Image (cartoon, rainbow, N blue to C red; front, side):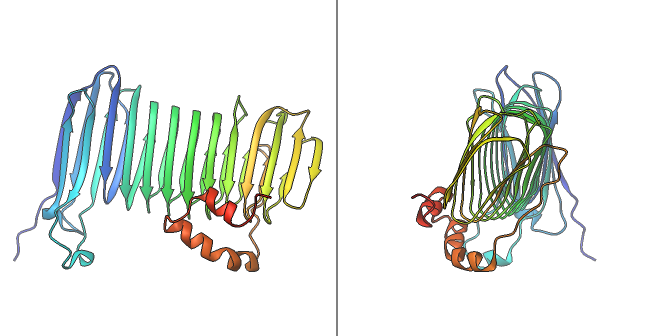
Length: 309
C-alpha cells in the first residue's frame, strides 16, 4: 500500500508598516482576503496533496524591505515534455490584512474573495470567479472567462472583462471606466463627478441609478441601442450616435459599443438583457476572436468595425 501524502500547511505572520501591501499570485485554488489586526498580515496556505502534483507545487511567502508581503504559488519547471499532461495541486490561501491595505491578486483557475479593505486594489484573473464586498479606494479588475460579483464598493473603478458577467450592487462609484467583450455589465450606483466611460463589443451594460439622477450621455454604436426608464429632457438620435440628457444634464456618461445595448434605470427596475442578432454575431466573430487572443483592444475593435464616423 502506498503511503498517503498529507496536505502541506504554510503559515506566517508579518509586521506591516502603516502603508501595508499584499501581493499574491496563485495558479489553482482559492484566495480569501479579509480584514484582521492593524499592523499585521497573516498568511495561511494549504497545498492539497490530492488532485495534482503537490510535490512539484511550491508556495513561497516573504516580505520585502519596504514591508510588502508577497505570496506565490509556483509549479516546478521540468521542460515542455508532458507539460500539458501535468497539473499543479490546488492551493487555498486565507489572508488577514490591516483594514487599510493595498492588495494585488492574480490567478489562473483560481477564485478570489476580498472584503472589508480600504486601499489600492488590483485583481487579474483567468477562469476564476471574483467576489468583492465592502471595499473602498481605487479598484482595477481584469477578468477573462470569470464572473465578478461585487457589493458595497466605493471609490474609483477601472475594469475590463472577456467572456464573463460583472455586477456591482449597492455601490458608490465616483468614477468608472469599464469594457466588456462578450459579457453583461451591471452597475448599481449614484453618479459622482465622473466621468463614466462604458465600452462593449457584444455585451449589454445596465446602469442603475437613483430616480433623481441628472446626466449627459453620448453613445456610439454599430447596432446597439439605448433604453431609458428615466425622464429624458433632450434626445437626439442619428444612425450610429445617440445624445441625450436626463433631467437637464449633469455627470458625463460615454457609451461605445458594437452590438451591445445600454439600459438606464433605477435599482428597483428589472432591465432585460438583449441578445445580438445571429447575423451581427457572425459578422463580428473574427474581431471577437482577435480580442480574446489579445491581438486587439476593445477600442481598436470598435474603430475597426466602424463605430466612429
